[in-house]
Image 1 (cartoon, rainbow, N blue to C red):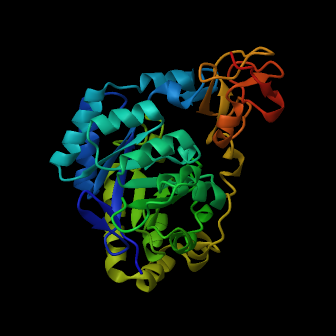
Image 2 (tube, rainbow, N blue to C red):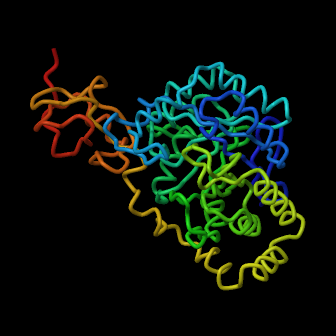
Length: 387
């Protein structure tokens, strides 16, 4: 049975693919630019305009590392701080997307941003790949009862199963809510590399993931070609295609170098709609004629879920672990005041997975943990005595 994703009264599946234009933070805080990007997405044929709701402290430690930019290297945390916007910014973006007949989607990265979006009355939610193991965030979103799309870059089957279990309400052994009338869930296959090689996408995986988890699947595509991965994913059963959009690849947005300018995004949408009408066999034949049968076969892959070669080194770094917010001395108790669930990125030491947070809280530090570093099992001593 074909799985469908339903959001705000609209249904999407392989016969009518949901096309998400990922604007992200490419607006740079400029409201006029944000409106221009929404307009470009609408004119290109996207069904949904997607933003990111950024509060740096929910994502990174200040000592995470640097990112190279045209003006020189800048601390990644500082760059995220510059991307923070007030609620009115997202309210305006939402209104502009809806005025143009599109769905509005915005990624929260923590409890604060999730609650802000909820207060704005958003109709659906998106979980980015690095937050797939951010269990408190998933539990927060599960409580909203909204349609939710989960990206699954740099993840294992066990990671996906745990995340979906929480989103379905099975946290702490409670009964699931995945029956009739439950909010729609969808899973996006993703490769966490920028850009991602098309040959890493293993698109035969889409049907298997949909069958195993009983939900529609799609792709969040970071490859550079506007057609190959997106159109072939529809032939492989994709219900959703998400792709970054930009006004120019030379702009200063963090994702602009791998995003599609409006003309290329429109070409992608045309290819997706053509794939819907032609069907899998004719779509694959057309792509083989254009790209070569060997390349198409490589992009389809073998359908076995594994970390892609281009993203394997990111496991435990782009996703979340438990980090010290400040120096924690020997004998000090771990608490919400001195640890948090953050992305590790390139410089810091990864810590224990977020699932271990209840076991960490209240324990005494057996050894000093420097500010920013991950908290490891060997850092944990006895439980702190009760007052």
